[in-house]
Amino acid sequence: VAHHFLYHWTMGLFDTEPFLPEHLAIFDSLLAGDIEGAKAGLTRHLQISRSRAMMRIKAVAEVISPDELPYLEKMEGG
Image (tube, rainbow, N blue to C red; front, side, top):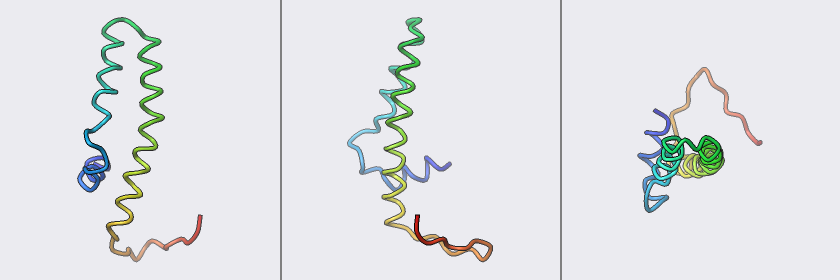
């Protein structure tokens, strides 16, 4: 759900969604029996995905402002 929400708001960040070829490369490695290659591909994908997710979160945070909820307090700073 979170990814669907983020993708909806950040479709223009990338020309194409880069996660698809990354997933395909991992599956190709698995199908070829290359477990080490699949592990390396998954590690690379997760490291890169983190930075892309942070870019998406930052882009969405600059565009929307959710309603305040009475049971949450806004924290300032780090």
